[in-house]
Image (cartoon, rainbow, N blue to C red; front, side):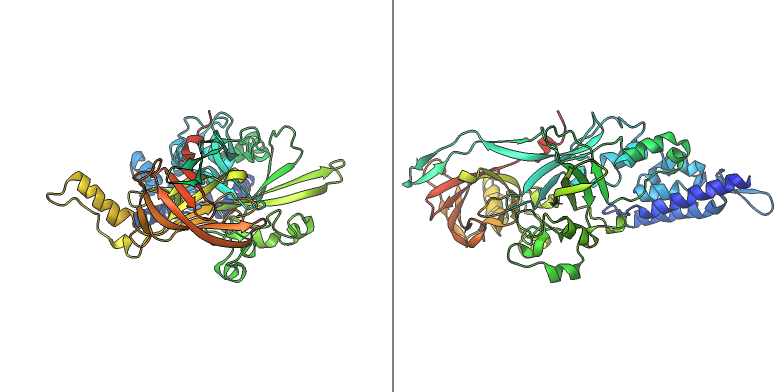
Length: 528
């Protein structure tokens, strides 16, 4: 009996340590309801006296009677409903209370909800290759934020790279592929309004580079295999220890490089204030200041940072960006370390090592609304540089959040209301086009063009000549630079608002007009 209790105590200590490693994100808007649920959970946790590890749902009192927990007397359906408000750490905590609560906390219904909440646009049907939804959640913890945020862009060289991260139900892996765009038609034609100005053809095809994964995290990792061989661990230890670096086993064909996935540690406000600069390369902080972000981290971009390929420098500065526990790890940034090895594995001779830093975007920034219809991820034509991806960000105007919804007036026709809505709510404020991927002249993370005001202060007129007739034309400024982002400046340009899914930029000094089109990134979230 003593041996059994010691064994249980050891398991509990490990379990409690793992629970402390889990993050505690509070669901937005749940407020006091969630507080009540946590209180109920704590009540159940305390009543069952974990130190005794009593496997029964009742407590023995000094007089020999059993005093059942009031929480456990609730109907089973109500307990499940309460647990549906809990996040993974709360579920793991409550599962320690007793067998009855562990049964509810480990229910596949609860864990399926947590898995699917991290897979927007990809409602998978099965936990394959795992036996349960709980096991599937465990197998990819703490990496579920990758498919949840889906869109990631990096600081590598001046060009950068954008990837889509998704979950493949067929293989049970989290995978990330580079997003590419190609032009189906080259060339240009003169503008009828001014034959000295050329309009560049732009019919892009956007796709994933499926032949070469950038990121791949498999469900059948070594710790899962070990866990599956231990019935005790499989039943009692819901989460593995925290590791900030995770090897990736990828079938990349001819690519001889090794790849590791690294969680990142965001800079504190104090460190950020002393490090980030307004001018490129912005103190090697990623993402740079023009991209709105909740977390920013230190970067070592190859082709930009003078010591980016130095293994000694990377290791010596790792304490600055390597999280030691879950509370220090960012869910908005991560890194990928790649290197090659020379000689037999026992020598462990690394060379050509590089660390690439990725960041994501708040979906609010690229989700269009009735008042901000141009927000989104776009692809643009950059002539000899090819296609590049942009974030078009529409900033809120002062007092916008306090405005009452615009409603149709009595006697006002639908056409009149729509015209007034455009005038008062749409054609106003600043529009920024920010490069998520760049080129040797203007790199990733910089403005490519800006329209300071879509309203009357920036209004030029309405285009009368084909192919732009009927389009609203506003003042803008285009960002240009010499190779290496030297001597950058803004030049006069005009932005043609063709539709909510297509724009044209007239680079006045260059005498050409280039197109931009919206990209639907959700089409890539479900593997085919």
